[in-house]
Image 1 (tube, one colour):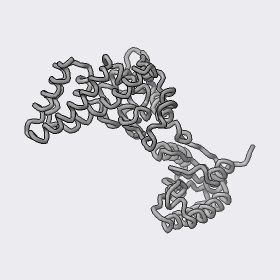
Image 2 (cartoon, rainbow, N blue to C red; image 1 turned 120 degrees about the vertical axis):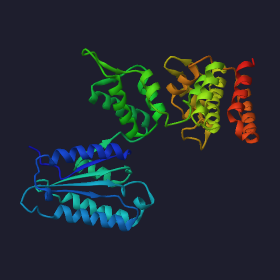
Image 3 (cartoon, one colour; image 1 turned 90 degrees about the vertical axis):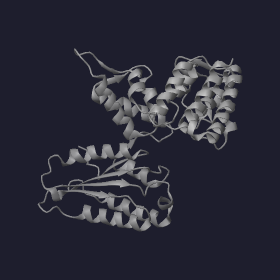
Image 4 (cartoon, rainbow, N blue to C red; image 1 turned 45 degrees about the horizontal axis):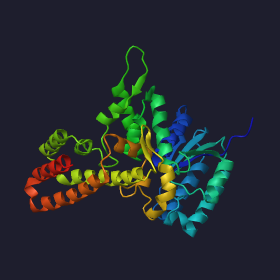
Length: 370
């Protein structure tokens, strides 16, 4: 049999996923350990070089300590952050300390000590991760981070499988769009939705898109306010009712206007590309967006983060969902909407105690004018 590897190294971009897997490995290693002194959890979190040195020294002392009763010891060095591309991580003193850390790990006797190290984020361009991958029991959680959306999608699909449920068409994409890149919340929402979907008579449990739309809050962006949905559907009565509900429950006008402006900005860009024949709104999203991104994305220099100002930073399925939920307004109508939003904002400044009335007047002008 091959020799046991001297340590377990788990790393990735998302600290929640890394720590969750690290805890699972630590719990597995300690399940039969009855001596509480043979189990130890240390923090590797450091804000400066001095704290890096303290954390590594504490780890050295722990792995070199002999178990009181002669058994195998299990050590979890968690929340290691000094391997990241940060000011502390790049410091020459830290790099020297990392060399010491590597030397400590290489000398661990796996028969005496089981060491679990969890690090997030981590700079994989450095020599240490490459050495750890060759030397230890190495796990990279979630990939290298370039396909963040795919990685998050894999997280919720894996969680659903573990719970014995599946996502219906469009449900997983909608969950990602509503929650955003919050791994903890994505997992909790998946569990909540799985419980709600239930299951009877042995039938497969499926989380449907309607479940997500009804039960999941909009934490990623403000585009899912009911008033925005109603407004862009062109339904005047629904929009007025949504506005009334929003203000009746103590809402403010600013998130409503923000949601409308964000949606309108995206639709303006979609409309321009549709009219130019560059993209098409299809059942699975905005067809042709990758090609359009290659052609026009260069014009959005410095605007790579997800934003309603940059269509090419958006998820194609999500954009198609926005544009395809109702008839796509004309370019002129969308430009007029932007002018009306500005007019409404100015009206709210003049009439701060009549915010609902200002937005009602704006809605009537937008949805009753050809």
